[in-house]
Image (cartoon, rainbow, N blue to C red):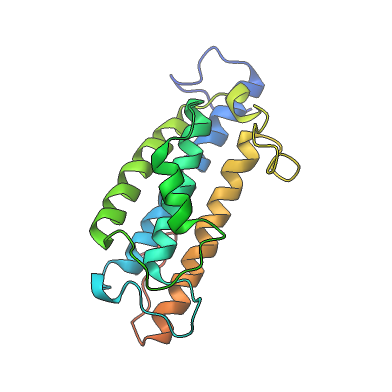
Length: 187
């Protein structure tokens, strides 16, 4: 049995395990976002759309794509309808929106919005209960492979790491120095 705290006092054993699970999930989401933003911290705005080959996912597209993902997640967690902002993000940064040189949001705007959405999503996840994590995925397309909100949250940690890998490869191709992995020891 995990240790109880003021937050878990009086909860069932299953609920305590769930409360303990929401902490690592929120920690992983926050750390993954920190790493993503570290990967673009030294990239000037004018280089955010640079591509080695046509169709390469450049930093502007990748950050916008993660913002799209955050916007979708927040609608799931708050059970609110997706609005015009989501549709605009989907047109620019969705899976079917090929990255190119079209108009993208500035680095400053993307970083600011990603920082804000991250704060909200991490706080929401940190406060989730067992019932919240086991809530069925309402998206019929995702439900067969991500049956619950908890599954979706785990997938989002992987999703951000996947795109951080693309950012790392993009940096290497441009001769930029590697960045320290935020989950590694500080040496």
